[in-house]
Image (tube, rainbow, N blue to C red):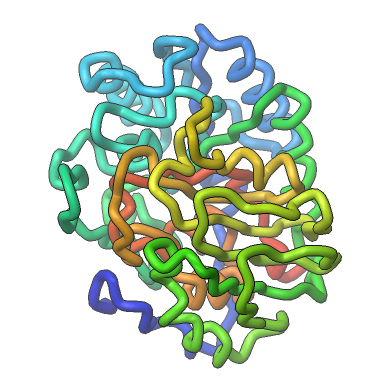
Length: 333
């Protein structure tokens, strides 16, 4: 396994295509107390053809960005007990809660409430064994189910997100990965590793751009930057399946903060994003590594696989988007 936190990758040079997760391997968790969750969960199950045996209904507090460990643990126990062992990953059909005390909700559902994934101040956290892993079945191989929020600022936004993911499948887009090196020195921490991404042999263009914002581009498949907020999103066209995020302290605070929420990426047309739910400091290992996510997505992995495998220390960050989007998955024969 690659050393956690390094942007080198054990799997990037592999020439074969990945065996991506299928709908039958995804579980959907619905919060019965949340009307958004009920409607989005049902829509997703129908659109993706998720087996009904893979759907678990829980009850969580509504309208709270953060919930307690006491409220969370019975819900996770229901999920663990209620899903077939064939289920390898989870779609959480809600926007809030995005945090369980000191953990992101996606980490909490993946690993259980493990304080080793938390941090107070600028400290390391436990590394994910799924980081840059060759595993195509994380629950079988590693005992964890990576999770992603089917989040949106409204039901309409949530459904549009799901539709973009469906449109992306096997589309083999001719898009560009834009890696922005910004003037924000603290948040530009990933830029030193961009050369690993620009050197990839992948079927997309990978370009480093020295600028604080990208404007007037119509081929955006990846967009990685470091900034409190990102200007010019309304001038861009994101291709179906696009992945985009900004390294900052609280981008994963989905219900509003003084920094830009990652929901703005989804509203602009991205299909997946990632953001911190509490102060992570600017450890690159706590954010997606562009070289890893680009390479794995381009090999045919789904959004949830490629994105999760690109974060070495995911405890303080939340994954949002359409988990099964797979633009480079070979078409079914």
